[in-house]
Length: 112
Image (tube, rainbow, N blue to C red):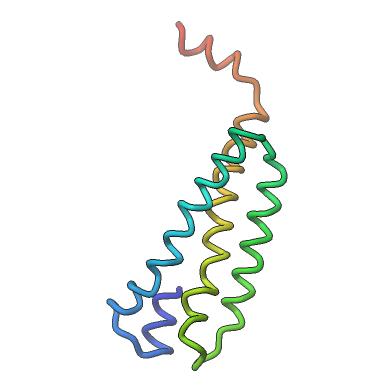
Protein backbone atom coordinates (compact mmCIF):
# COMPACT_ATOMS: atom_id res chain seq x y z
CA UNK A 1 0.00 0.00 0.00
CA UNK A 2 2.92 2.36 0.54
CA UNK A 3 3.70 2.75 -3.18
CA UNK A 4 0.09 3.77 -3.73
CA UNK A 5 0.33 6.22 -0.84
CA UNK A 6 3.43 7.77 -2.37
CA UNK A 7 1.85 7.97 -5.81
CA UNK A 8 -1.68 9.11 -4.93
CA UNK A 9 -1.20 11.20 -1.80
CA UNK A 10 2.26 12.62 -2.43
CA UNK A 11 1.86 12.77 -6.22
CA UNK A 12 5.10 10.94 -7.03
CA UNK A 13 5.74 8.86 -10.11
CA UNK A 14 5.89 5.07 -9.93
CA UNK A 15 9.68 5.19 -10.28
CA UNK A 16 10.00 7.65 -7.39
CA UNK A 17 7.70 5.56 -5.19
CA UNK A 18 9.68 2.41 -5.97
CA UNK A 19 13.01 4.12 -5.35
CA UNK A 20 11.74 5.36 -1.99
CA UNK A 21 11.21 1.72 -0.92
CA UNK A 22 14.75 0.55 -1.70
CA UNK A 23 16.23 1.43 1.70
CA UNK A 24 13.41 -0.17 3.76
CA UNK A 25 13.55 -3.25 1.52
CA UNK A 26 17.19 -3.74 2.44
CA UNK A 27 16.16 -3.89 6.12
CA UNK A 28 14.29 -7.19 5.65
CA UNK A 29 17.33 -9.31 4.71
CA UNK A 30 19.40 -7.50 7.35
CA UNK A 31 16.83 -8.60 9.93
CA UNK A 32 17.06 -12.15 8.63
CA UNK A 33 20.84 -12.03 8.85
CA UNK A 34 20.71 -10.75 12.43
CA UNK A 35 18.28 -13.51 13.34
CA UNK A 36 20.45 -16.18 11.75
CA UNK A 37 23.60 -15.01 13.50
CA UNK A 38 21.93 -14.71 16.90
CA UNK A 39 20.21 -18.11 16.56
CA UNK A 40 23.35 -19.91 15.48
CA UNK A 41 25.57 -18.41 18.18
CA UNK A 42 23.29 -17.95 21.17
CA UNK A 43 19.93 -19.50 20.23
CA UNK A 44 17.74 -16.81 21.82
CA UNK A 45 14.68 -17.64 19.73
CA UNK A 46 11.97 -16.22 22.03
CA UNK A 47 13.92 -12.99 22.41
CA UNK A 48 14.23 -12.68 18.63
CA UNK A 49 10.49 -13.20 18.22
CA UNK A 50 9.70 -10.50 20.77
CA UNK A 51 12.26 -8.05 19.42
CA UNK A 52 11.08 -8.55 15.84
CA UNK A 53 7.42 -8.16 16.81
CA UNK A 54 8.25 -5.01 18.79
CA UNK A 55 10.12 -3.55 15.82
CA UNK A 56 7.19 -4.35 13.55
CA UNK A 57 4.74 -2.69 15.94
CA UNK A 58 6.98 0.36 16.31
CA UNK A 59 7.51 0.65 12.57
CA UNK A 60 3.83 0.27 11.73
CA UNK A 61 2.99 2.86 14.36
CA UNK A 62 5.49 5.27 12.84
CA UNK A 63 4.03 4.72 9.36
CA UNK A 64 0.56 5.44 10.74
CA UNK A 65 1.85 8.79 12.02
CA UNK A 66 3.02 9.98 8.60
CA UNK A 67 1.25 13.14 7.47
CA UNK A 68 0.32 14.30 4.00
CA UNK A 69 3.23 16.73 3.91
CA UNK A 70 6.01 15.60 6.22
CA UNK A 71 9.79 15.77 6.34
CA UNK A 72 11.37 13.78 3.53
CA UNK A 73 13.65 11.83 5.85
CA UNK A 74 10.66 10.35 7.67
CA UNK A 75 9.50 8.59 4.50
CA UNK A 76 12.79 6.69 4.46
CA UNK A 77 13.67 6.21 8.12
CA UNK A 78 10.23 5.42 9.54
CA UNK A 79 9.77 2.49 7.15
CA UNK A 80 12.99 0.80 8.30
CA UNK A 81 11.92 -0.68 11.72
CA UNK A 82 8.86 -2.54 10.40
CA UNK A 83 10.86 -4.22 7.64
CA UNK A 84 13.71 -5.05 9.99
CA UNK A 85 11.23 -6.63 12.41
CA UNK A 86 9.64 -8.60 9.60
CA UNK A 87 13.04 -9.91 8.61
CA UNK A 88 13.60 -11.03 12.21
CA UNK A 89 10.18 -12.54 12.90
CA UNK A 90 9.73 -14.72 9.80
CA UNK A 91 12.88 -16.85 10.21
CA UNK A 92 12.29 -17.05 13.96
CA UNK A 93 8.77 -18.37 13.34
CA UNK A 94 10.13 -20.92 10.89
CA UNK A 95 12.73 -22.24 13.31
CA UNK A 96 10.23 -22.21 16.18
CA UNK A 97 7.98 -24.56 14.21
CA UNK A 98 10.89 -26.72 13.13
CA UNK A 99 12.03 -27.07 16.73
CA UNK A 100 8.54 -27.79 18.05
CA UNK A 101 8.00 -31.04 16.15
CA UNK A 102 9.77 -34.37 16.32
CA UNK A 103 11.90 -35.10 13.26
CA UNK A 104 12.66 -38.81 13.80
CA UNK A 105 9.41 -39.95 12.15
CA UNK A 106 10.06 -37.79 9.10
CA UNK A 107 13.50 -39.31 8.53
CA UNK A 108 12.08 -42.84 8.42
CA UNK A 109 9.51 -41.76 5.79
CA UNK A 110 12.24 -40.57 3.44
CA UNK A 111 14.51 -43.58 3.93
CA UNK A 112 11.96 -46.07 2.54
